[in-house]
Image (cartoon, rainbow, N blue to C red; front, side):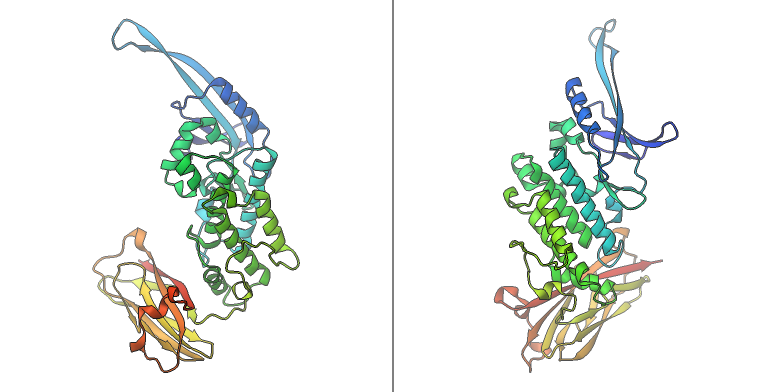
Length: 417
């Protein structure tokens, strides 16, 4: 047994010198013979390099004698159905195992090829087979030996009909579920597009939150050792952030079709790579061109704390001002752990570097496993010459007041021996 869900258990099976994946549908699902065979016919027709290949099925119905609780000498016959679906076995597991932030995990080219291939598989499902997946999520995208994604469980939600639809909204993966479905029960191709938008965002950033392109590009450039990478890679990242945002529009009519999404990707990969899409947000060369100058160069973006009980642990952070302006900064942690940043706020003069010591104050026990990763936010903005640290207030970093404010996210990693 290699997996289980609300509707089926999955088994790895050796069948005539070939390993296959067998999905055993739950007996609790009431599927009529007519519905089952109709959907199996549809599954048999799905053949695409980015879809898990359906190989066959086994169906059996038996009447099982059960003693009548009211009449002990009498039996009633309960119908018991067995439904087995056989698929090709995909060796590298599901996509959720490979999702990570920009600084770790898969390189950008690998992530981008996964995005493109998922889109090609969904285009085939929507436009060639006129099928809605209904449950697109990283757990239902499998990766083969060459990291080529294959969409799984297509047609299963439709086969299970209303029971599946209700379970989707209650599942831990409901973050991939379109609001038009959760609010009104609407199912359309745009249902899958919403799910795709969340997946694309996660592949680019490692999380589902919609993030500014400049923040994402900063982290990718840091991974590339502050080299420029390539202009094409930066355009691809920026475009994927745009697509993820558009796919998650509240109104399904405003979400692009899968063909439109692929045309956006084709466009960015073309020779000029310039977008003609009027819906692109944060447009402007400073967001896309790799040589964009930030207010402050913040390094490192990963802070490593070799944890020891009852001992203060420090990590240096460097803020470098490569501009001709005065830049104010403010540093604060995202969690409730006790940190001390010296200085936690200040002003960096032009062409100057400031060192900040961030100290995790002594803890009497190690953080739990789910808290070995933490975050800091560095906010910075341009200020007038002559101001001092005492003049820095929260209002300076208020975007509502029209100030240009950059936010830099730092990862804190605890190394617990």
